Length: 313
Image (cartoon, rainbow, N blue to C red):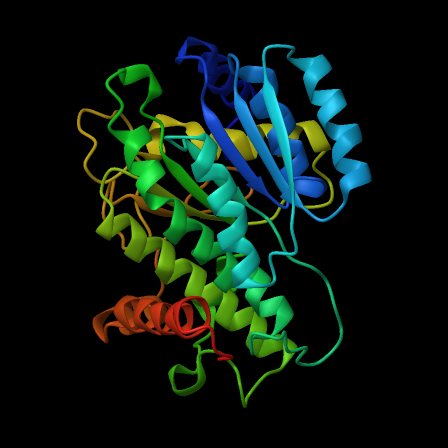
């Protein structure tokens, strides 16, 4: 377990980075997204922060709070139902019109439901879309801006991270159905949890391998016993600590072990307390069978069908 004093020390050190870091919090008007956004604003100089969500009233209140917490911050709310990929694209276009780089893409968007498959107009289950497809669409769309941050001329601006907060442990233990990755015909809440977790794990691993200057993290939700400020602080630590360095980084002390079992591989699976999850026999077997490529190939197929061909998947 990473001590709280180490978390606070690392977060306080963000003041030494360049001003103007850009962070996007998808699902940033409640829960872990809000707590982490609050700590990011508290610990950085003149940050540019985008909150993406649906609740305009709550966002207005939060922005006022964050502005008071750090008057040098620039804050903007993007109102969007990102269960639809077309809305993800619109939100990303708004960001790209204003920013040339993104330092942190932090995603917690999702919702609790006991319903069965709830298909959107795009042909995806709404819960599954929020927990996987929409998150990966944000990562896909904003990769060029993450690259810009990673290769900034100022070394103090070279933070580039993608964080998806969703329990990685389910995907370590259970196998997805590769014959029906979108769960079109085999949907259940259990299957949705398994697929979202496993696909997040492998997608983060794939993105880290394909983009060696950007780190990717799959992060476990906090337990109920952890207070809001500690939760935000621990998630900010994971999103910024040097030990979770991208693949191409060099001379990083105490670099963490990646999800593929290799030190500093750029893709990491973390517990709520900062401890790294190792791989599992299931993941190792799937990895040998090309799981990351299969999952990302499927993801690109979904993106093409919905976003380029403008058809229902």
